[in-house]
Length: 482
Ligand code: FAD
Ligand code: MLT
Ligand code: ZN
Image 1 (cartoon, rainbow, N blue to C red):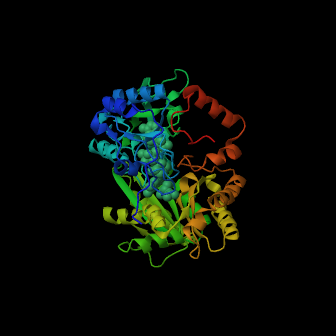
Image 2 (tube, rainbow, N blue to C red):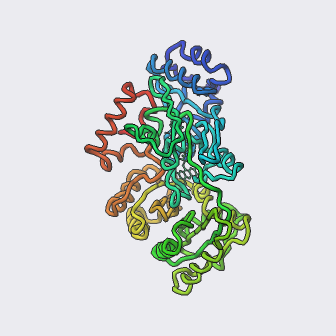
Image 3 (cartoon, helix red, strand yellow):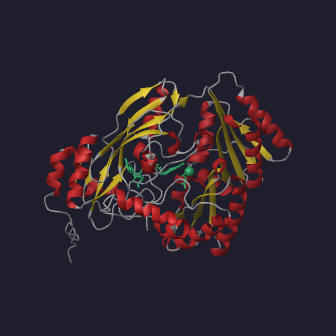
């Protein structure tokens, strides 16, 4: 029998939609071939396989607004997409080919950088790395750093209210936004690109769109706060006996000089083991592998702060007290980068190791050790052989309590139990007064948890806001709200 390719299912979209879109964005702005749209149709983790009817790539805000107006008139749903690095399937279109992906990638201009106001005005499709580089070129720092910064875009960063390694000092993405330009679901443009440090003029609309995951409007540009670039940076990797010891170390740094802490990250031994296994070029710069690690970075814009001395002083005290078992201080920029790679390669290493269930959870900082202990025990009871990969932003109480499939289990069998595992960790987090989503958002993976965690008045209010701003439900349907 000759092999036949299955026919492409008929498109549920209005017949003349593509021609009308092409008239707005031109041929460069519209992708329709399956090979071209494929990268926009699935997520970074490979959890979802959608089908974009087409990918629309406007070149500027006017084109984007015209696309949204056209789609609003025809009742066609849009899925805003930035770098497509979402951990929760937030930017994936539905499987039935009824939705368009709206990519911001061609809107990546830096509109202004003011080194006196310390602000960067930038379009949503610029990558976080490009924004950081633009700030650095003027002696400033955009103080947000995440492992995906080479791909993640400013629009995605703001729409997820991303956190990352420097939240402990500067806050989440939300804390860095002074103004926004947003295209609303009916195609109106809200020109809110203000650079003001103070502006109490009614409801704070910009914060409504930050963290809304593309369900209320499309962010097209933003004004972000900058800070002076650090002149001195000191990094250490420490082996510690337990999560309790890691917390005690954090507390010592906080008491010593809280303003100097740029990052304080925790890593469990199993995750570091995966990183070393999947990156043969990396070495652990300590005498022996440990069960737990802390990575601390201090930084300051002051030229004469003597951070190296601070780091040594706190670490010596912690070594004497038995809190730290072993430690290494980076002697060069290359060593700093190598230590950071042990942390930043966790996500890739987990992907290479097989299937994982991620729990991006937060608890009060004081409860992080209890979280790691209790959730580990609960997961091992639920599924003997499950491998715990706990790491992340200890200084914010945000641990990525990720689980790797048992070696003897198939990926499919493991992933079939993802809700069971997430709910098992969730029960521990709830008992510790925590949250089931610290920085990755809800996307398509977690709306089922919203009623149990945010039900009642809170969810009702969110649903009323969604109905008021997007009554036809055309922006990123199926995400965030159950
Ligand atoms: P996308 O994945 O494209 O979209 C994310 C959501 O935002 C979707 O709901 C989408 O519809 C919406 N959206 C995108 N652009 C717009 C726009 N212009 N207007 C309106 N809505 C929009 N996250 C962290 O918080 N901290 C970390 O430390 C971190 N580390 C990571 C490390 C790795 C290796 C990877 C792969 C991911 C990591 N992430 C982290 C997750 C992810 O990178 C962030 O959520 C990031 O903010 C997503 O940006 P993006 O441009 O890829 O957005
Ligand atoms: C990180 O901080 O590296 C990511 O947010 C974590 C993850 O992969 O779960
Ligand atoms: Zn993280």
